[in-house]
Image (cartoon, rainbow, N blue to C red; front, top):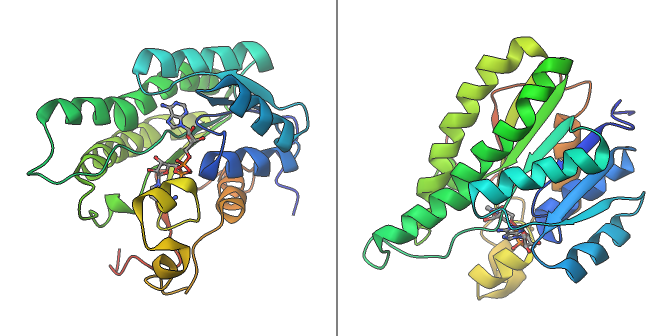
Length: 248
Ligand code: NAD
């Protein structure tokens, strides 16, 4: 299926590896022009080379709203505009109520909530003006079902989901869609770091019997960015191999 996004200009945050890289690669495969960021120059340049199709590597740390907005501005300058915004960042450190200090919440909310808002602030008004835009935010299945010992992620991602839903309804009439994807367990460095038992042991907890693959996640994200998905907005979609057990 032709997704109809050839030559659309996409800014993909935190894309040197993992899910962000998977989304950047999938958009490039559809002919989009991609600017992608990471914190380390060598790593993001290598990732952009592997993605191919003249993907633009940008060095940016999106852990603060100011730097996150600057990434979108740099992507805009490099591509001549931003039609598609994919927000992403690393996850905050693990911890429980008992082990987590108040200031750690501030950092986590900056990383996984305020930075997303800042990227939307930088990208969405121009999308509204041109009456076409796509925002896809990578959050977590923790929004539906908080994950034990990830209290920072559970807290920040719930907040950003409220923001995204509100934004989606405000800009839907301008041809801009806003959706989030909620990864469950995908075979990335983050999951290997968090789950000491190794990929096989972790996969046994998923009904699908396997961990997700970044390339599949990317393909689904690319569909949400497509022409065909123009009527899908305000959703928060689990991509988790059936792990989430709730009805809604
Ligand atoms: P990952 O750690 O494998 O990759 C994250 C990428 O983002 C890396 O390239 C890293 O260098 C980059 N990055 C991290 N912090 C950054 C920053 N401040 N600025 C710029 N780049 C930064 O992680 P992943 O598994 O791909 O996960 C992506 C997001 O999805 C994370 O927020 C993670 O918590 C969340 N998530 C992932 C899973 C999963 O199954 N992999 C599940 C739930 C939530």
